[in-house]
Length: 318
Ligand SMILES: [Zn+2]
Image (tube, rainbow, N blue to C red; front, side, top):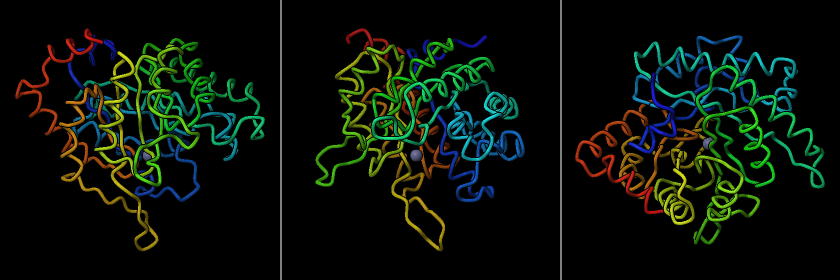
């Protein structure tokens, strides 16, 4: 029996996975297509991607269920398959770890519902709450070790996601914000104006177990380090960081992310030293990025700089 995720990250930092969306595109998903449906119609392709992450050394892999809420699936006429798609998502990650001969944690992924809530948008709070409740329950019932509510920009939506995960009985609930660097380059906040301190306080109050950041605009490894530092100053909760592999550019009508594994890996130790408990990548990151992260993390841990004591100590001091 492996330890619960929350126990494991108090002992040593863990490695997350890389991008799913950009990998699905490489595997043939059309722009605007429903990647989550692939859990049912092309499970082999999803498995192949996640198996590469497991083989590259990921300790935690997110399910391919970013858009797996009823509201998102409804846009593809698949609202009746919420339970099926999310359960398959969990199963495929387990298969990926098994195929790679590696034990790991399945993090059930819940992305934004993709609209705005009243009074700004057309969705009522109840509709969003129900959609998140349904998805979180499907992921937890299928055996996810944790739930991540990710790429969040508003506290209202994040709060509904956290509530849903807790109500479903998730053993570990991760809230993850997408920050954008401000035009003057001074700082970063979400599209809805939330800064890391406010997000961390909110998540701690709402009962999340891990505060995280992912994706965003111009949030490179250095900015991610800064976000981790600010989270750490605000809360004693563990921290997770999954920045994008640099900036997207369009080359031959294909989206390309400009940070290589070699460039990104230089940011791994600073992230660990800032106190990150889980490190992974978001858009544009690949199994090669994750392999480079694994190497940097292992070297760091073997050097004794980031041993158990450091992390336990750090948590105690907060
Ligand atoms: Zn992303």
